[in-house]
Length: 252
Image 1 (cartoon, rainbow, N blue to C red):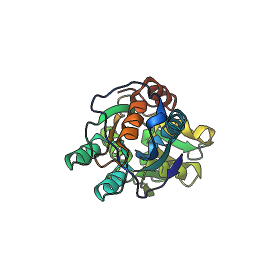
Image 2: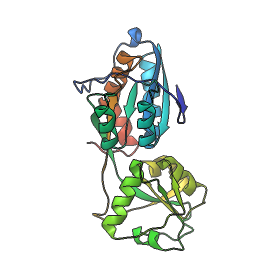
Image 3: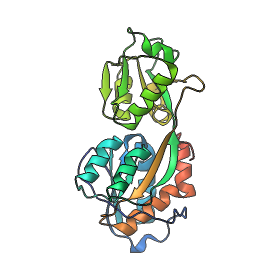
Image 4: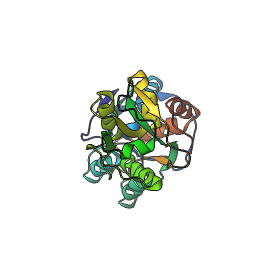
């Protein structure tokens, strides 16, 4: 199994039934399956990829993790890939409308949390602190789902925040926090979980957060439609739910 940055990959065919059955008997599945997935899915999908390869020894899974808008652009440009998992239904809707995917299913949800470096050197205790010009803040670029969600949260709170950096995806924001290059970043709850002791999490005020839905679909030009459908089945299965829940994702 391989994880890649933003590069060309391979599409797959969606399971219109929305089946949540566990994948079975991988003897007939072969090939190199390419899955395009939102950056926030890195840890959960990597774990699912390992399980998928164990169940289907004839399949090698390659992941491309990046911002959802960048992945959609890859699909539109004809990059070969089998499955798309987005952190934004609107992005997936554009891919479907263009005829590149069909039958998307929302499989998980996420919310935002403030991440601060270990020890919290900026003394960030809440969302209001992000509006302090003395606090260095990292946000996602507005066109990617974590940036859209952050803008909605800040607007709902009536806050104006001037970030020192706008990053292409949520993992890039998390990296800035981990390295201590910023005092705080708005990332997903799952990213704080994945970072472990490298960062600390600060909760958002009740009622200020917004929910992010994650749809998955196979791509209509998938080189390996059977394997693609089987991977989507795994994501939707009880095993998929278990892995995603352990990573901090909510259920639809």
